[in-house]
Amino acid sequence: MKKIRVLIVDDSAIVRQTLTDILSSDPMIEVMGTASDPFVAAKKIQDEVPDVITLDVEMPRMDGITFLKKLMSQHPIPVVMCSSLTDKGSETALKAIEYGAIEIINKPRLGTKQFLEESRVTICDTIKAAASSRVRRFTPEYKVAPKLTADAVLPKPTSKAMIQTTEKLVIVGASTGGTEALKVFLEDFPEDSPGIVIVQHMPEHFTAAFAKRLDGICRISIKEAADNDSVIRGRALIAPGNKHTLLKRSGARYFVEVKDGPLVSRHRPSVDVLFRSAARYAGKNAVGVIMTGMGDDGARGMLEMKEAGAYNIAQDEASCVVFGMPNEAIKRGSVDKILSLEKIAKEVIRLCD
Image 1: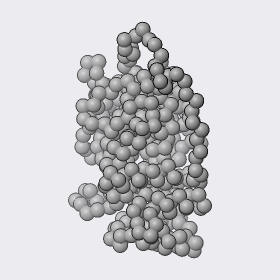
Image 2: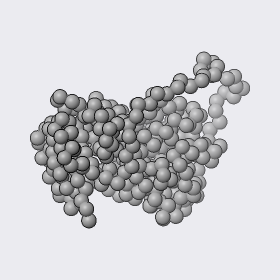
Image 3: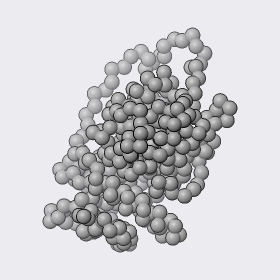
Image 4: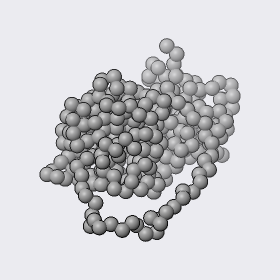
């Protein structure tokens, strides 16, 4: 079986060596070379094109974002951004996703044996997902400003003192390619949408920046989930990186529990954990959505949701970056409907109405 060839681009010799050791431990991956900056990387690519590039965000001579834009506009190659655990680095790395990067990983650092092993699993799985993903060419977008109505200045009059409450909930799981897929999905929801809880596989400290980014462009409120947050209309909660997030219910109130725990389906947060809790506490009041991602996280939990009476939707292969997670859910009989990314939100809204 042909190995996945990886080029590591990072200005730190220690990081380059650590990543080399981690990736070389997987029999399916081969490190074809390393580069201290984008200029060295460009020369290496001319001689041999890698299957995947790991790219540092901040480097001398040329930063990773500038190199990524040049690369994806001229010669698209699957790129995994390698970023430090900082708020600034998180927001910059998320910007890279818009330019065509497949995924984000934390820079490996020293820790306990368990921490290093979990990092190895996550990093190697991310490289494999990137190698099998659909790469898109980056082209600058020129958007026409939307035609506004009077609603932008003054809301329509209503005789209702408040929006009628509902117990319908939307439970979502996504992984590789999910950051952009969730943007498309969430932008379609109106302000009075049912409460949404999301697990997107993403490193610790990145989910807060991701939620903030989405909150600024969507009509609904979006935040990183905190323990005991209520699931309410007009708001989406995104599970924090490196923490499991569960749906719970007390009387008529739905809320989330954020907790530590082992990797489940090789992930933390795990879609299976969220989906199982939704099966237990929401049942037929839930609409489940499984989106682009490698592996099978969420397939088992989604079947439990269906058995509890939930209606489940999977993203179709054509619109997925990686069809792994939806495909596994479909094969298990967990899914009621398969839709393209652009149609999922409209169907969810219809079901919840």
